Every structure is written in C-alpha cells, then in structure tokens.
Amino acid sequence: MKNTLVRLATVATLSGTLAVTSALVSSMLVSSALADAPKSGGTLIAAMGTNVRNLNPAVQSGIVTGFPGSQLFAAPLRYDEDWTPQPYLAESWDISDDGLTVTLNLVKNAVFHDGEPVTSEDVAFSVDVIKEHHPFKSMFAPVESVDTPDEHTAILNLSQPHPALMLAMSGQLMAIIPKHIYGDGEDPKTHPRNTENVIGSGPFKLTEYKSGEHVILERFDDFFIEGRPYLDKMVLRIIPDPAARTIALESGEVDFAAFEVAPQNINRLKEVEGLTVTSEGYGAIGPIDWLALNTTRGPLQDKRVRQAIAYAVDKNFIHKAIQRGTAKDAPTGIHPDSPFHNPDVEKYEVDLDKANALLDEAGHEAGADGTRFGLTIDFGWGELKPNAEYVRGALKKVGIDVTVRASADFPTWAKRMGDMDYDMSWDTVFNWGDPVIGVHRTYLSSNIGKGVWSNTQGYSNERVDELLDMASKEPDADKRKALYTEFQQIVADEVPVYFSNTLPYHTVYSDKVGNPPLGIWSTSSPMDMTYLK
Picture 1 (cartoon, rainbow, N blue to C red):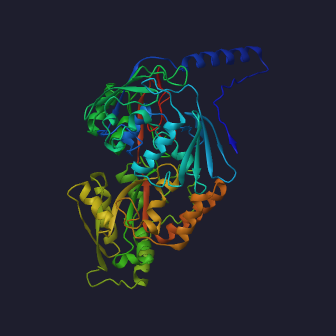
Picture 2: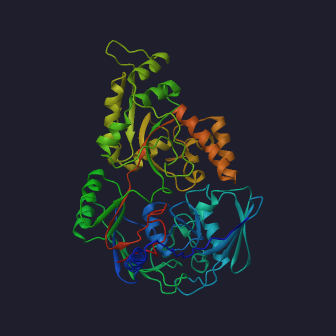
Picture 3: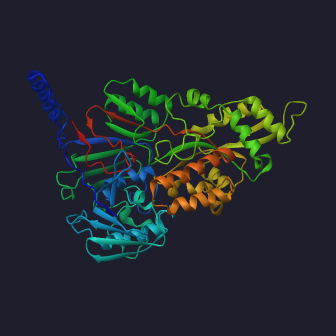
C-alpha cells in the first residue's frame, strides 16, 4: 500500500455577512500570520540535565543522546503530534501487501555534513550497525536484509510483518550514519567519531563537544529541507543540578529545557511570567513509574497478595503528595498518550477491607502483633525513595512489614533487578514508541531475568505471550489495539506490576521560543522548525 505523506500549506478563507467584520477578521489573520511566521537566525540556549557521552543514537539509547543525536543525524521518518509518520530522509515509502518488504524512497538532495551524498548504502549499513550494537534488539530483529537497487531506494526485507518498524525509523531509534566513516573497521560503539568531528545529515552540525559542559551545534547550510533549520546555533548546556537549571530558566540565562522532572521545580516555574511549562510531547518516550513485584518469591507468587498490595497503596497520595499534581495516572504499562492504551482496566482504588480479605483468603493471617509477613522494597534512584517509604507505611496498615532497602549506587540496584534478587522495587520504564520496543520486554516469559528492564518480575502467562506475539505481527492498527486491550486487562488482573503514574516530564521554554518540540518524541526529534521570535 502506498504511503506518501507530504506536508501541504493550507489557506483558510473566512466570509461574513458584514463586510467590515470580514475585513477586520482578514486584517487580524494577516497580522497574526506575520507575528507567528518562523524567523531565521539566533542562538537557542538549552539545558540538559545529564552529561552526554555518546552523540550517536545508532549505537546508544537514551534521551540524553537523543537530543543532540536527532539534530546531528537524520532518520527516514519523523512523526507529528498525532502519531502519524511524516517524510524526512525518506520522501515516500511502500509497504507490500504481505508486510514483508518496506521500500524507502530517499530524497535526492541529502548530503552528510562533509558533503558526501546520503545513499541507500548508508541506510543498509546503518540497519546492520543498529541491529548489532543498539540495545533495543526487537526494533529491527525481523529485518533480514536491505536491498539497494539504486542510490535512492532501500528495500527492507522482513521475516514477518513488523508494524513496530515504522516508529523505529524515527530519529531517536534509527539514525542514518555515514558508511564512509563508520565502515572503517573500528567498533561503531566506541568509534572516536561518536563524539569528535561527528558527521551526520541532520539540520545541525557539531561545532564543539565538552563532556560535562556543553554541546554546541551550528546550522547545516546544505540541509536537505530548503530554508531549514531556522536557528543559526544551539548551545546545549549540561546542568545536572535541577535547582541550578530552574534558576537559569527563571533568569532567562537558558531559553529551553526538556525532561524536567522535579515536581517542586515544575510548579515553581509555572509561576514565572514569560515561561511556558507543559507535559506535552512525551507520548513516544512513554515514561511510567511503577512498583515491580517479584512473582517468583514467597507470598508474591499468589495473585491475591499482589492484588491486596494494589488495593492498599493509595495512588492519590502519590499523585498529590509526592508528585504534587504534576503527573498523570498510569493504570497500565502502555503510556496513556499511546494509541494502544486501554484505560478500561481495574484501577485498584484504595480499599483496605478488600486488601485484608484477599490476604486472609491467601492464608496469610495476622499474628498477635498484626503482622502477616515481611517484604523488602528497593528503589532505582533517589527520586523514588519517597515512594518506597510511603509503601512501607501503606502496607503496614494491612499487616505487611516492609523494609526499605537502599542500594549503594545505580549498578547495585540494576544488578539486583537483573538477578531478580528483590521482593518489590520502584522503577521507571520507558515505552520507546511502539509496544514491541519498550513494553513487550517486561511481560514476555522468554525475557525473564535477562538483566535490568527485562521481565524482572518473573511473570509468565501463556495468553499474554500469545497476544504479544500476534500484536507484533498484526499490520491492522484496530486489530493490534484489540490485542493490546486484552493484554492490558490480563496484566491489570494479575498485577506483576503495580502501575502508578507517568513520570512527570515537562518542557519549559521562554515565550521567545517558537515551535518547540512538543510532538511525541520531545527533543529526541529534529528541531529544524524551532525558531526565536
């Protein structure tokens, strides 16, 4: 089926019964259009909260690489705010009726920052590198080969239909890297050109990278979209301290920041005149806070115990007292902004009577001191410690004695999770666009105990495995949604994970910033259309 999408300019025509009204409206429209028209030039000062050690998204996952990486490297597709793929390096594409081939028709005028043309050979090379070196193995696993019949045609041959491929072809996940540089025999994962003299075909080129300090990007004049990017320069300042970023945004020292997560700072910035603070733009990132439950250990092997825990934990407290109203409810493992999200599942509104009854039914009667049994609870990073402390108090009300266990550092916690050496743990997990990429890994029985952010709950359900397998191959969006709807209902009933809230990521930008990245990928998307008013 042919899928050729091209952005078209539209002109709205208004008419009215009174000529004066019509003229006034037309005048207002012209003035508004002039005021809002993108302007070229200027330097955007942006803040990044974490140091970046690799600028190449083809070999490194994560939002900190995605921000500069999506500016330096172009991808076949880009996405609008409605999850609709749009042309980028691929001006059009064809998907065969059987779903086994995806043909990318590349733009004819794309060149890398060193002037070399972007060809189908670069696409084929990039797919091979991503398959071998990117941590998300499910993205391109069904891609068996890439044919290159001419310089501007790349044909991806699949072993099975793979609808997740469309989202995988966007900037965060499928950077097209130059074969003439990375094909020199060096390991792409540790290639020196990942941080020095980086060459991509994106809207900006690298001027300077200083680890722990900044990434400076300049306009690429030969970018394949005429007139873009609008900005002359982007300075990405690395400011790890959230308080320091907040002060920089308040003072106007910084124009823009994304992935701001501290509730107190978010609410503080909402009061600053001249700043916009929004949670829009993170649907494909899909960050969710949840309480992982090890279904292979002790009392947690019983579904009734896991349900009791869910009924004893008050989400409203987490949302209001801990997140301070900055996060949305997340009743399932598929982010609420995703088209596959199913809100019609058991929400586990707090009910201590039901929790106690389930624990009694499961054979865990309270002792003389009111205690039924004990569990430990871990947390991945400091921001989740309040959640762990809260759960300790909440479960005490139903006779579960919880010990909060801190880890010496992140690797210690990650090893505990990967080894499934825990009872309960707060965690933050990303959807990464399509459920095949970031959701399936948590629930497939074939992925149990494969390291942190695998199926560390030890969860196994044959019907869930079947549903996820079918959804990974189903090309029809409505049928896929039906499969994921049933999947979410089963998981909500069996509670291998207690879902709490979306991570309260927010974008903060000055009123002088036009068209900030508020699509589904936030700053993990090209910012060629962002401008300074």
